[in-house]
Length: 424
Length: 162
Image (cartoon, rainbow over all chains, first blue to last red):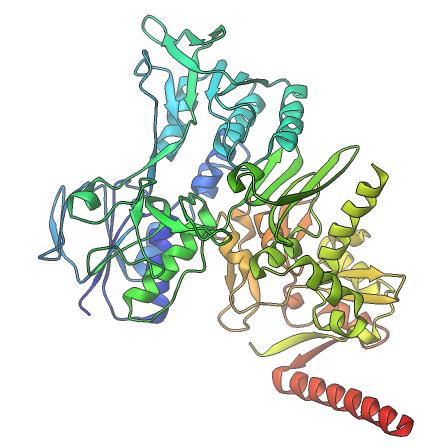
């Protein structure tokens, strides 16, 4: 093999590059990326905004790390075209011949086309540049549109910076993709108690202002503000891939098989830009989470090197810190599962809440507020597709239990809920 | 990986000295919740299970980490963390099936057992020998002997009954 070219310098791209380098010291790796920065953690951007981490801590690698790993970086390049026939990648400055191409182009934040969305004072949160633009703008009164995990984290960060924050969510509860309505209501209450205004079921119709943002009009009211932050979703960067004849899936991501191979020979894809398979349902999904992107990068790299490794599927794991309370969501929500035969086990105490979703006696989702112990073991049960009856059988047998000692924390968590359920 | 922290659950009495010495050694605080080793207790059956980082070959904490601070030490095989970059998001804690990541609320970072750099304090203080720090070969020998003993005892019992 002559070389491996990676497009994208995010979690998936770097994970792929490092995996290749770990398995093969010789093969040249070329990394092409748009931003002229070494790898940084996009997940910590809201923490940078709140001042919890500084700019230096944000960066995972520095320039020397790339040299040390013998990765050639071509930063600040836009990809213009992929010639899948001739195996040539055309960037804004050069043409690169590739033997294997890994697309880790990621996604970009979208601003819905409402009037006034181009006024100064509209921001998204996706890159370091976006965060620095927000800081430079010195926001006072902020409207955050969208309440996914990024929306909530940004709202909290700006609140800690002394801003007056309002969150506007189109759906009937906040964090709609990762939480069910009951825990979401509790999180919403926590935010409200700390002084963040949360509006659900409202649609933003327009951003109004003369030279810059002054108001946001929703279908119910007018919100005065000087800054609008759009956290209303992302779109996959697939344009170049589509033009090269790579098949795009129904959800808008690059279609890949379980080896991260696209429909064109020699082109692999991983990270936010692909449609992967959900570990629990087997259905196509856009995972958009850091750990999944890293794993997909590894899989793509190993298959590029000729190993036959299959991806086990994407699993959602979101951990948020809401004013010092740890909030966790794993796996599916009951909305995503539809109306099937889901059993929901739940419990709460004065400042904790937890619920476990069961489908055919297997754990398929877990949401918890204020609980931190035992969750890792529950996640392992979910990944291993252990049925609860099998779990209880093993736990009840003292010899078997000593062979699977990690069941004990899960048991303490699951039993906790049982105590509460009987008490309800 | 050259040395293992072997845990023999059957010998553990749940005294908690390992937790205490770990917390004192690592943080100078007499607070077992800061210890890198935890004992899971089930008093009704008298089961005490000391749990600490299992030093997985492909650690799920490392893949969950949002800041890529967790790596494997190429020499010792121990799972190590660059704590300067840890933002304390606890994703690793949720991904670890062994509950072996500890949130250090003093430093506001998540930590795991690092074998005290090759001389674990918990092993030195364990009064029953439930914790041992062994070379790979020794630890395998140890496990084989224990299993052999358990089986002979089990079959011996059956034979005397039958």
